[in-house]
Image (cartoon, rainbow, N blue to C red; front, top):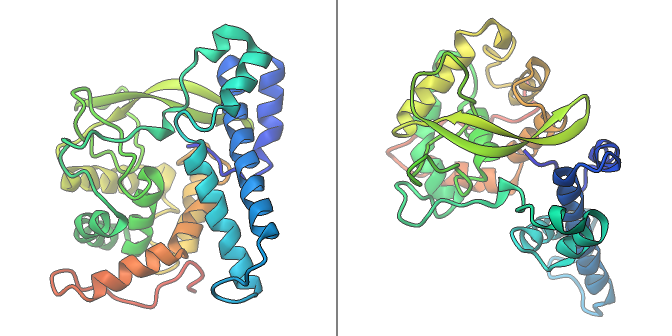
Length: 292
């Protein structure tokens, strides 16, 4: 998973890899630079505006405005972007590096794929009942499980396709090791090794539906001693996120913080509010990333 553009710790590793003339890391560095450039451009445009903010001047407004600009910058720079990344790659890495495709983080399922969720609300409605059942078995708040699925898939918009181009329903980024006998999906993924990012081709598990991916995810955590500290955290979603990080669930050094950010995000709060109003999926309230 790609680190956030505001996380400057990642660039030390990227710089070291780029100095080794790794063309794939050069492409990632160029993409990150373009996103930072776009974000700074948006900030300059807002600073030049003479109008008052819609919600008034406040530290909270400034914080959320910056978060929105970061997300907008990532969206504007995804895929082909504005062309700045391509120009940097050609200048620094030559034509061979310029031919590298952008990272797979921008893929989307074709519109014909089953369960192509259109927004976080539709994604949450499908995932929530299964997250509740998984949460009871794992002793974990279902909000935390929903948030992890949202983190891994961008609220269902970036679920990797299976080998036929349909939905793999891999909502948790679980790889297909030698013990996996089911269907698989293969993609290029960004991993971190000793703080240094690099791309690699990896095989991931593919499932028939949300129920089967949630069942496998539950067994993956419950039956593996490696994740002993992940289970049983109850309503303490922050402890769940930290335990995932410490157990090595993902190589991204910012994985736990990203998960906490989603749990505390306005999108999550809106989604949970909508679920509470649905008679078909009643949920408990009052859980937070800092619950004791």
